[in-house]
Length: 505
Image (cartoon, rainbow, N blue to C red):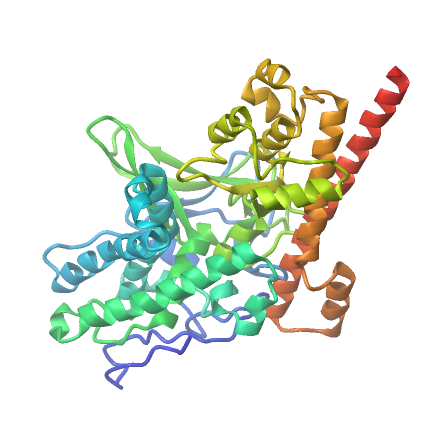
């Protein structure tokens, strides 16, 4: 994507929205060479930063926070007053904000229209349900807050400039990869997501340009500057990689609204599944304003330890797409497959199952598939292998049921039992072995869709490649490792089942 250009050449009243195309994982340049001291700014605004908290260059994730001395467990690390986090809030009396608000409201509408075009016309009314809408708005909330971030980045004298100037100039997310490196991911579900985001940014660029043309200078939310797909991508990436969903205003029913916000300094904590810090929201009895804290967890933080938060139990798809990194041996990583009768038949036959009937299930089997949401008008055909479940319960139940001809035995069990891997062979050893062997064959088929082998990938990494190429190769290597690990696990289970059957016989 090309960098954004200024409509007015002078920089005396504007901050440029240009975005560098190159990416650097370990040494990302900040927006300005010598940004203001972020820690001093937070303290000046009434916040708190523990004396041992320092900003440092992390060799893996770029900038991060490190303890310069020991920090006792339970200590407050960073405390932000309510006015310091960057949230999407507009001033109705501000002419520029009066344009930004309706522009932000077009984000989910544009995405929804585009996604509905993927469905047959007769299914559109069925698709318009809360789950789908929630998914679309969840996916693009980063762009709404990103518009506010861009506005503040363009504004000279912005309250948040000490924070924004410390943000990276570039991000290592796939929307900024070259076309070749997007192909290097070799994984169709992620390729689809990357292409969808790129299409959205190009379409939204035109939407923004149409809204901004012919505006008076006082009405322009970005100080008269041009906004293109590159600057929109920078803003969306900044938010998706750094923002948190926290409690907002209290609603009449006593609950709190869910508001995305960027938390200066706190968002420099890098990720770990074994974190030593956590985010808390507190409200003093005599003060209605909410404080946001990063506090140490139930263990001491030692000198030179990085300060770490858990970003979530996510697959590498989300880590790369939203944060720009890949977790080696990620226990939550998985691969996506499409549940397809012909594919299941082919896998079963390859596994030695005679006459599988996935393509033409009996009516009673079809009813169970409907209950698993693998059949019907708008089924969810995406199933996963890997992660904590090892095999998604819906896929395991479907295989067990369709590889059985004993209707009465199947109907003895609740779906929760048929979906559970811990329920050893509920429909018999032969059925369980056939199901596991079918999954192993599915893994072989999935592995065959990758053009390169892990050994090839390791050899490429040794040759020295660009940051984006390295990330793409690491990503696909982890996906292949997930498949191989599942195959090994299920092969062991098959051997145990067959040994038990032999002993019984």
